[in-house]
Length: 545
Ligand code: ME8
Image (cartoon, rainbow, N blue to C red; front, side):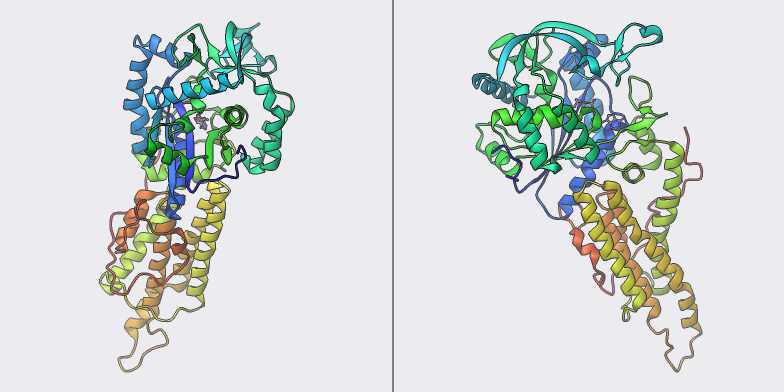
């Protein structure tokens, strides 16, 4: 029961639930966009999909932020969720199915039942903890995790992620017997190499667990912003034990409600937990140990992506390097935001953000490469055929080759999505953009049109029907691109789809299946092709910062 084999029908993907101590920056948006691209892709394969995101609202970090702002933690959380965390999903064009908040009763009640069960089973015991704690990470640290401070922090031990002094705790706590799970975890990583991805993350986790596991302190009794421990309400649950359970409570763990029970059966276990590498150990070590203790099936994959860096450091609000998604989206649009971060950074590795790189890719790839292609084809159908798609003649070698590129792009992108190599999926789709541009350059439809004009009235030329064939083929390539780009740049894909007069909806709920993009010959003669507004207007001064 504890092995990840028992997959449900549903492709269930989660993002981390984000702390509400601050508003989202582009690091958070990066994970959410990746999650949205992958789930849209799976929807477009017509699989059942569940995409969960939400907010992590308990713990000292949020409590202190609320205090500093002179409001209660609950008021603070409510304010941030409504003003920032929910709206940013709309800004990013993310189609999440649910949004869990850890202060919701559906979560707190089930979390209490879960830990009571572990306590009853003897998995939790009372003890005392003495050691360093980083409130920024909300994590108990080992002395070896820390670095020596310099300058104003001379003589202090610092958290390497936050660069701030850790706090020394000395508390009576409850402990989870995590050390007992070392062998079972190692067996899991061995039997299921796909459990932790990419390989660099798997190696880190293996080395960490092989080094031995300590029991985990799972309660705090020096503050009260958390879920009370049911058998000892002077303690609140450690925020990470609380937070990790969101993935299960949100889909109906241990609910009495029949509808929720059915939801859990259809959804559990998760297919992919997408996380940043900062929180890999929580997801790849503590979380499976918790599920093993409870006897629940394990997620299939924890995928840790890299960090967005600014000036070589992990971008963060606390270091004032955080950039709000709207700073980029107001200027470039949500499609360009999604495209840029998914293509420019190898998913799984760190990547540096720069305005110059974003602007250069926007103009070269989106405006000139793709947007211009779409408007040229629509303009030529308008000019030569009054905006009505003609009947194509027989496909020659160039047409067959382009259709072959489309088929290969679909196959390569599908494979890349399954491996969560999102950047490779975008690259694969772009081979079709490039090949279609090249096809037009080589076939020179404008010259064919001119030759047709000069043709003698009594005899057909060898070029007969060629112009129609070229433009219909280009339109078919665009139709494929609209389907393939829908998960990545949904707004532009929808606009392109409509400009091709395609009648069936492209939208995420009534989708054109991905594999339909591998074939041409779908758009019927007589289809109205309209040249709408430019999909990605060229920006003359793309950087305003
Ligand atoms: O850790 N680059 O929440 P959090 C890339 N509440 N991704 C980044 C990033 C960056 N510079 N900065 C943040 C928590 N992220 C916990 C999670 S889950 C049960 C609880 C993304 O608000 C990345 O996904 O600190 C990272 O793991 C997450 O935001 C951390 O968000």
